[in-house]
Length: 315
Image (tube, rainbow, N blue to C red):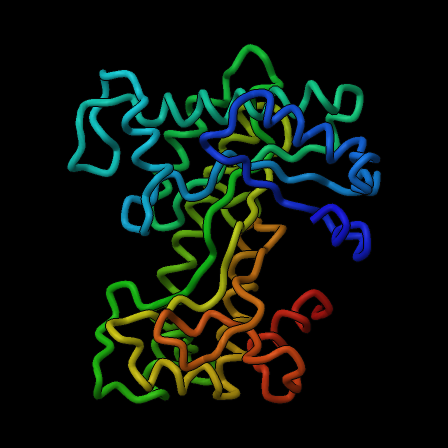
């Protein structure tokens, strides 16, 4: 990752493993700062911003495996009801915050004098801003500012949550669910997009989201707290991935849906957006995540990728 970022002039995003001890974290941060000459590993280029997150989707008790979720639950101190339900009485967020704060502090110690290169990310859940709020509530007032954070993050997807997509749904109906009909009078916002806009505004930053969490934290902490997306894009994964969902991925109209999602995120004060993912087959039954289907696909046909590339240059 260091070599790739150096070649591209890009900024890395490192997720520290939840089972990593302090020595691992210190050595990792030192490697990024100084490289490892004996192993021909160069230091990261000095103009890079370095995004650091503790683990990834700690809240996610539905993914497989759920190692980080279970690890936090099993190592937390009894006292508070499990945030996601169905668990023991544990201080889930206290444990999560303590572990993140420790790693944030260690990165600051390694980068002493260059702390402004580090962006400490408190990443929560898009559909439930309460998760992000509970995590940051335990980080925002740390006496040691090295244990605080610089950005909040969530996923930035539009998808089939609460949608009535069945085997008989057409690709055009899927597209309408995504982004409605902007040519109608008045324009119709798609059900999925309206849902995502609500998520972004709940997390967001003024002026797009004056009551969003990032704005509240900025006001409370007296410094800018960014709102960024650790991953995002389309999220249609109903059932066995109905053929209509797969077909919609290849239709020109999905360009508009991806573009509208990026616009909605930016309008809510979002900045960095990590699109997920680069390449995979749109017929994949695990989900049509790819913005391209293969490495040398023409952008004429790669509508999702074209939207991502066009967005930074639009007025």
